[in-house]
Length: 73
Length: 286
Image (cartoon, rainbow over all chains, first blue to last red; front, side, top):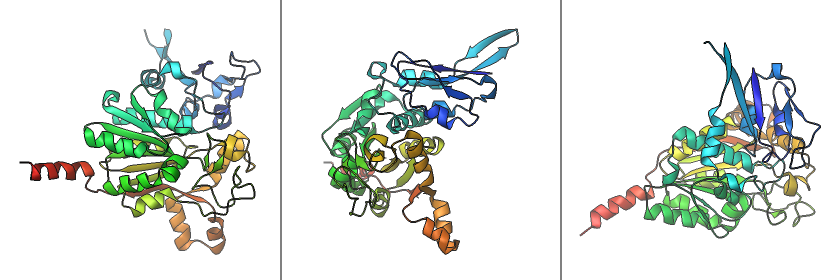
């Protein structure tokens, strides 16, 4: 189970992450960010395999992939 | 059972390496120079460089804005003279790691002569030459690397000058490490930049960077997706290139025309300026 965090102050809405996502888990959101661009969002959470290509390819350091891991207590 | 988020180190690295107040970057949508910064930071992290002992030097141009974003000492110098300043820094204090960001217009055009002589001297510098085929910041004039027939503001009917191959030039001058990668694939440039930093002697890493605003606009590659795909299609790995040249059919060889070779072109050892200088000082000291 993975989630993405978008720094909306830095994201320019170039959608490179959406174009290059190998599993097509990301989509361009319909809403606007405070900068006035459409940020990406993780629509199909179950398809994200945490390859972090979007994170590596983001030119603006705006996207971070985090992994939710279970801790056995 | 409790669930928790494990923060990946990438975000932490970026917060520790970048000047947050300078962000967001000035680069256009679809520009790859931000990626070059990204890859350089990953490479620096892989090598384990101490940023307090690292100097970033740059000239003028889009790519030369990069040192301003890194939380380390930097020099933003005059047009084309980044390598001259970097040589000075390295000669005065050989303990520092010097990384130069330069563009194709800055490094190969206006500062072309500095490039020749810094390679000839074999200063221990890592040069990341960001090649976007154009003078992007000043409005898209043709650069020495503009491909044959490329449309720019100064060549509205197509470029008639033969483009310059910076990697072949560096190879001919005997640079110990020469590589060229497009920014569209992240892993190879990261490894290459790390190798270049580790390499004792001059390391040139040419990064092919899309410029949709100044170059793509005149050449039918304005859309981001299109220009990034173009870089993927127009580049051929050196091993494949050599294989086709040797064993390929005439059609395959015909397909290579106008494409760009990528890969590591040279990886050798050569005595550096610093070593020779130290030896000279020891020999002639009274």
